[in-house]
Image 1 (cartoon, rainbow, N blue to C red):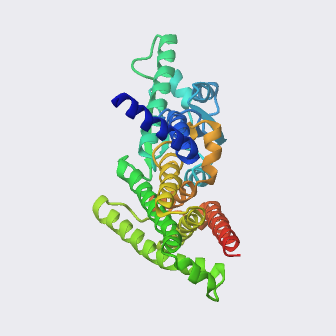
Image 2 (spheres, helix red, strand yellow; image 1 turned 45 degrees about the vertical axis):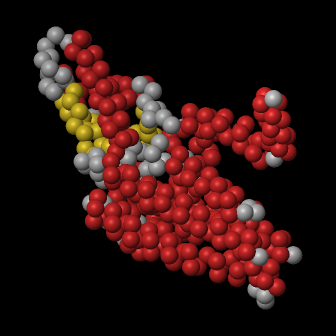
Image 3 (spheres, helix red, strand yellow; image 1 turned 180 degrees about the vertical axis):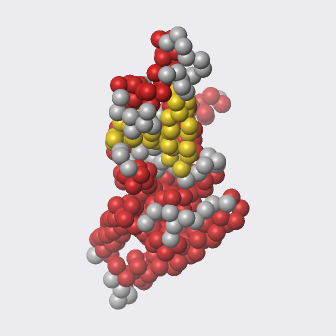
Length: 372
């Protein structure tokens, strides 16, 4: 008897799930999607680390050391530099994560049995990546030293010594890497959720019909919905930045005006995404779920917040180009940690502006269709 009743309820539930395509899709698709996403994106391994070389010796020995870095599989030579200005530009724009500086007289000093220091300059805005890159570089130099010792009979001790120098974050404090990411994460998730619920709330209360009858165009409605949340979110994020400076010694090496401008572009895009979600959701519950998925996962996984983008598969790297937090993190870390100007992060600000324009336009178009 009990078995029959259980079977009847189970059969009824299976029919209901089969009719609810959304629930069925979540049960079947999301686990596989998360497995693929986490499996490929969650990786601390680094490959093809972009490196520049300043070879001041131009000898066969110096070229052999450069070749050891390139052939290791860990590094990719992207530039050969000859002055400090070019090195600063490459570091500030994140074109390179490290630079190898080989001093003049490198081969001569090795031939007479002297220990020669080579300098490894590291981009320290990402403490975890910098630590890993330092380990790779040290290991390669040690292997090259061991090879020379094996081929020489008169050398005592390692003939090549690594002298690391870390830019922007000399102590490799992980908080200086994580705090900007947390600022972007908190700004994205709160802004998207707040506006995603706003229009849906009007739908559920029935007030959206009154708004449709009012002499109000969709752009004015969207702008009016965005402005209050924008002001509140901007004040909230600035307070978070000040708290991070007070509690975690977050530096401010750049311009406050540029920081506010970058933060404003990011928030407008996040608020626009929330408004767009609100135009496709029928209830606050659905709007909240979609907003969390659209803001939480991309910002945490695909922005470079925690996991380096360079280590992801090419397909996932392509997806990161539509994640606004990717560009905001570059701009935020550049302003706060490096003190760069608009000439350095201009392309990232343009990307944020494009994203904000696109999502606000989409939200306006969809809302206009619903009102017509």
